[in-house]
Image 1 (cartoon, rainbow over the protein chains, first blue to last red):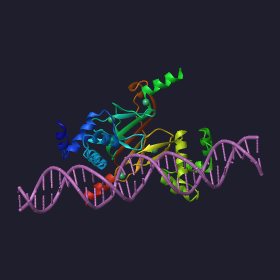
Image 2 (tube, rainbow over the protein chains, first blue to last red):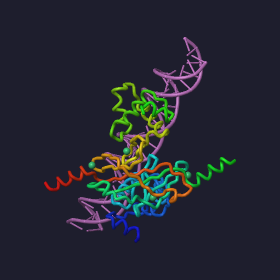
Image 3 (spheres, each protein chain N blue to C red):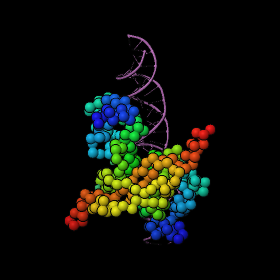
Length: 140
Length: 140
DNA sequence: ACTAATTTTGTAATGATTACAACTTAAAAC
DNA sequence: GTTTTAAGTTGTAATCATTACAAAATTAGT
Ligand SMILES: [Mn+2]
Ligand SMILES: [Mn+2]
Ligand SMILES: [Zn+2]
Ligand SMILES: [Zn+2]
């Protein structure tokens, strides 16, 4: 489905700016924060304002085509809300990976009468690469 | 185990301020943010500084007797790091409950060669009380 | 007491987010 | 196709949690 159709399908008028922010989230294999999105698109949209990036991301999350990912930083990152997944964040290099898993508990049974809208799982530790670097340093 | 012994056992010198912040985390059935802790103890420690609350909580999390809980606010909350558990946050009243469950996936198998230090699970939605209120309003 | 280390404090800086009013562009009405 | 209205975008200023940092106070060791 083309990008403008995705936006329309969620009740978002596909302006140029919105299309490009959506495209960036879709293409970049990252979990960008507001500033990264702003920097990345500034060259192609010279008049872009950071406020617009904020506005657009708020709209996207409200309309459920994106979601805010809260990690161990004090800034929000954003992710297309396609398939639910967990995140791993390395406490050394700060890299963030998707982890293809979600709790499969029967939440409705654990918390009856509660309406569950979202589940977010954040795993933190040291990534493979950083562990290898550490090991190399020790043996030198 | 008395509070000062808990602190000592984790390599923290049990100053009065630290004891009281620890005691507050232990007693209050909440997930307080820095300001709540500061306000609560101000009457008993008139000279208390918010910086000290920050310092102490950093120390506590570093020494693993407390942990920062990041919810859908833009401020940290704190919890004694006793037993691992998930959190439910109501998007209406902002209340936070403990949920006695954790993912039991074999993370080491899912992410081999990664060192996993922490797993945090945040469930968000509408709590029982808020749902009841909604239902009552509809039928009026 | 004297000295050094630790703890606490107050104030200023940082940095992400929000508020808001002006401006610009697009759509609707005429 | 002007005119009017709404929607989208922008820039600046305010907010607020957190951090930086140096001075002051307290504690521990001699
Ligand atoms: Mn992701
Ligand atoms: Mn808890
Ligand atoms: Zn790493
Ligand atoms: Zn509620």
